[in-house]
Length: 215
Image: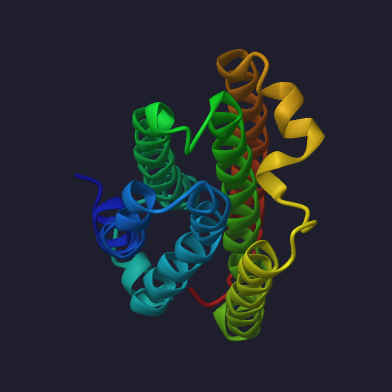
């Protein structure tokens, strides 16, 4: 196995296990708001895994491997993509199983796909930012992103519980409209996210090749 992918995957798989262990039970026991709130933690968990992975690696380690900058970028992005796909798949399966409880509906799949696609793109850009500016510069950005995300999620949760007219993200008219054909809409959203992710990876290859930012 690719040594970079294997080493990075440890952190992404650890993140995935903790995400599903901590959040998964709410998917199967709580009301529809679980499908509003819990998916929003996905980009935070992915960013945390990336930060841990980058902390564990160094320029010296990567230079000991007989790999090109292109191979490094592809391995890193493959780890991000694999983790995101597994998380998305698990959430979609649970949402389908809970339709008989009227906890989720076809638009839930669209919402999960939308959140997953945004997470993929955002974390991809953060990874490129590390190669561009170095981990020392990007670490505060990553920490701020994760902390700010948690605060916003908590505000959304409180709003859903305390304010009757709170605008739920998963029930906006766009999501509901796309939910009229959930699998077609989800396929289109996933394809758009993958195209964007691939372009970000291409950008990462160029940045990595032209920059010696500390990894």
